[in-house]
Length: 128
Image (cartoon, rainbow, N blue to C red; front, side, top):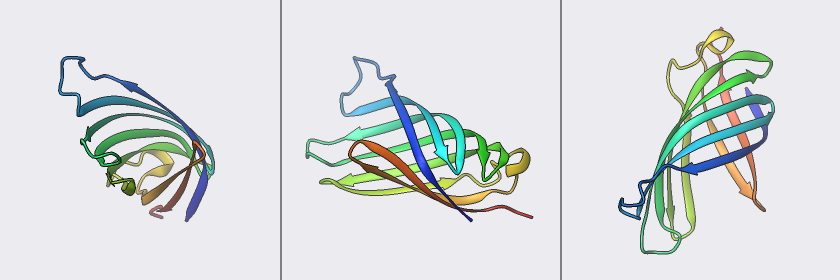
C-alpha cells in the first residue's frame, strides 16, 4: 500500500547551552495531511561537523491518527546522514509498534523537502 501527503514540523532545541555545540537534542511535533491524517511527537539527537553540509541524526517519533482511514498509532525510527550536502535517510516503522486498526503495520517512509515544504511517501503493509 502507498500513502502520500505533506506535513508541517516544529523542532524545539532541548540542548544544554553548556553542552558540546556539535551535539544537539530536539523535540519533534508534526502534523501530517494527505493519506496519513495524524500528529506525531518525538525526540531527535544530532551531531554536526566542521565541514559545511555534513551531519548525522537519529530520531524516534510516535504517530497517532488515521492511515488510509484506519485509526491507531505507530512508531517511526529515523537514521540520517548528510555528506557535504548529500542526504541519506532511512525512516522505518518500528516492528510491532502498530496499535488498534494499525496493528501489524510495517513499512518505510521517504521524506522530501522542496522550497521549505515537507512531503512524504509511505510504502506500507498491514497484516490481515
